[in-house]
Image 1 (cartoon, helix red, strand yellow):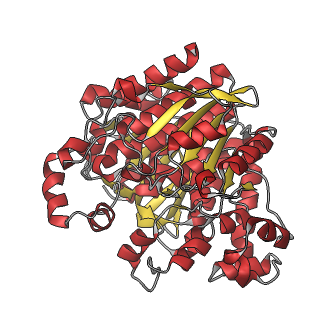
Image 2 (cartoon, rainbow over the protein chains, first blue to last red; image 1 turned 120 degrees about the vertical axis):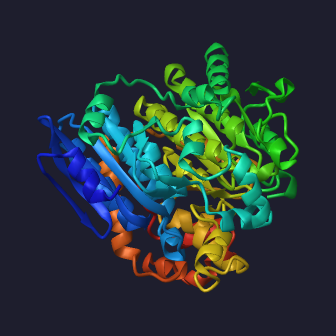
Length: 238
Length: 296
């Protein structure tokens, strides 16, 4: 789905969401509920400036004191891969964005990510994966890293990686593979009202990070939930 | 500094033993339980019984702390499913215990052979870390190992209350080889080691305020720095994040047009900035006139 269609389906009564330099910001109203919107459009990379602009929006929302939900729309590539961004401390800027989203949640805002295109690596971690609930639309295509970079880092030929990607969900890019690990709560139906699907999600109770249990149930991460629980238990009894 | 005390040369278990009070460390899910990665066999890669990270508790000058140490010599210290879950569990335990957490980073980032599980593990760790800090728990990162602190590891480090680095402590999201593969050798020549160190290394990070303390490459120097940093406060709240926003915006405004780290060091008033990479710790610290700069 295109961004304009997504916004139209989310906010049938209109919205004030604008895209500036591929960064999304604004708000809309669904059934008398105000919803803040931020995000990345156009499969663009996230660098220092973009991360701080988005973090600034989130801080401004939390400053207002309401508990309005925040919707994070994502169609990005990876973090900005450049000498300049690393020189300036990209890791701090991306972590800061994630921290602001986590703060907003603690202050009572539901944070909901909607992955409608691509996303990868640091950009994905700092946005979509820092929301309380992440949903996706069919056709979304998240990845941890592109295959050429993976080949360089793992020192495996790209043909070998491609062959393994076809039969190894835990390593291969793609929405279905990532959903198996518990990262994606659910995939929305583009043929039904997104506003209604958003309201249904808002009505669900949240509490704690359930992604590892979800991944265990879906078979994508057989050990994470039980290992984390055992460490927590051993620490508490030490 | 002697070779046998080098933080860079030491393994994860040696670092923990040297950092904590002698004999105080007790491990959670130790290697005898053989909780190996369920995914590495697909790639015909050997597993390790601790999956490249040790987590546990001990004391530092008598004070109880939680500690995690990555083993950079196993799969580059990368975050896989089990590796990540051990750190997540430790951070989830911290708020109710009210004990500070030390994370000894030594990582290339997400373990690509189990990329999806590793990526989501990073997100779970960041959430547990931030929630611990919001509950008042201090989480301190120590960075000076062979693998540096790259990729998702650098984002976890970015969530910590404070970071202690040595010169060897490289912090960066994209590694040199990844930038070169994607953007070409003109953007970043990964074989230019001097470029790597001055763009991503511990001295640069300390100079721009990306790290709070600079330590010699020595396990006892890291211990001393940890004691000083732990005397501070690592709480995370709205005021801290507002200050962090301003701190980072000021940095981009001031240094955004710099081409090289040396330009930034010059702007910071460091005398003879081109000599920085070669300086011993004492002399390096003497050259600094402006130390940045709080928040986190």
